[in-house]
Amino acid sequence: MLRRVHITEIELGMFIHKMEGSWFKHPFWNRRFLLTNPAHLELLLASDIETVIIDTDQGLDTRRLSERAEVGVQTQTQTQTQMQKGAAPLAAVVPPPRTVSRYQPKPPVRTLLRPSERQPCAVPPATIVQVREFGRARKVIGEANKVISQVFVQARLGKALNVADISNVVDEVYASVQRNLYAFNGLLRCQQDSEYVYRHSLSVSALMVALARQLKLGPVQMREAGMAGLLMDVGVGQMEVDLGAIGGDYRHLAPSLVQSHVLLGHAFLKAAGDIPPSVVDTCLRHHERLDGTGYPYGLGAEAIELLPRMGMVCDLYDNLVTGGDNRAGLDPAVALRHLAEMGDAIDQEVLRALVTTLGVYPIGAFVELASGRLAMVVAEDDGDTALPVVRAFWSLAQGRSIKAETIALSQCFGADSIVGAADLEGLDLPPLGQLRQRLIEATRRELAV
Picture 1 (tube, helix red, strand yellow):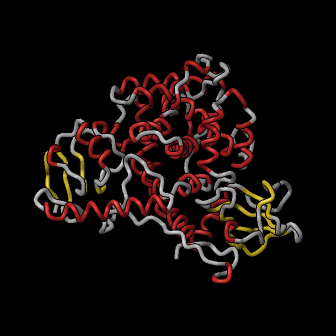
Picture 2 (cartoon, rainbow, N blue to C red):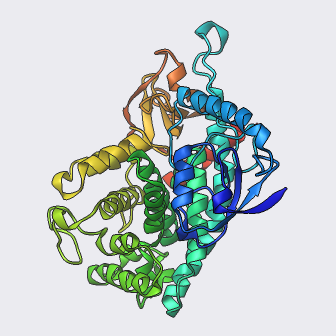
Picture 3 (cartoon, rainbow, N blue to C red):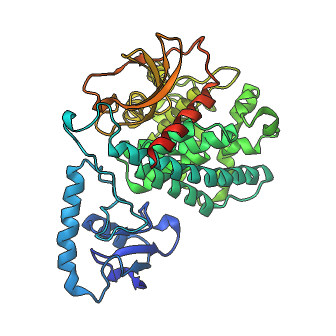
């Protein structure tokens, strides 16, 4: 049963179904969660929210006093269990309630078996759960692309930005990243079915959310990071050009016109009035460089805050792996090395956090295996990102494609391993975008049983 209660009646053990009021008035990502953390209760009481809707079927009612002690014990046990499993504590995420709701799916449980108890290199259950997220992420990406395209049309027509639409997209991106850190952006890396500017905005938004999580930023900053990634190129929609004629990739335009998008976007977001200042600032400064070589103002490191620093790294990374200007995109692992070579132009600490976030070999990276096969990374291993799950598809010895095999390198016990990034030059392969999409879809079909 849903009940509306005043903020002063909120206590631990209640299931928050909805926080009434503006999206910016509360400090939480999840709008529905079981309230078990005293710190979260303090944040809620200190917010500008006056009333909330609680679900008494999934948590305590104000009248069910006798159950509070029981819930307190069980939720404390659940919290300890999650910490033992390595779950990262975030200010807006709580352990699942006793009766798991459709809003809080059970977290994957890694099953560790002795080598004699299973097939070597077999895909563990945690990876199967991760790959299943590709299906949910695809739906989010499809809906988000519609909203993003509308935002760019609004910018072109000079209409006011609908912040509620943007906040919903950011919430969905965050929820997907939270369910699985790698699936959402990995799937975007392997999709080629939307205009560059929309796919880029969504990809950078997901990267920003994941990076903010890695940097252990607060829930409000994480939300703003996701929104900044989504909106930092909104000025492209105000440029007097036909993006459709150039495949939606504004980077094909003259440099002076390309550079104007940050000023146009900054003015557009500032006029909206209810966009967080840090998001507006990131739109303006994500093409600056810490050594003063960026645009539009050539600012130095002392004038660039954390969110724009994150924006410049995520934007550069996605541009490198996407390609453009008649050049093919770099392999994700190679792109990370390229960014490291930029030295003081970008924040190397932020870059190291991105590497930790994506893994040494991100989803979509092509690698060479010690067994003489080429493979693509299709999932990450939470315990060791240097030992991802790969899908082998090519034999170097035979010089031809082979029957694809999904291999969990962390479960191989040395039977196979990555020796480095793959060199695909001269091989009889389809375009890499098509190859990535084909491999990721085949893996999803194989494991999403």
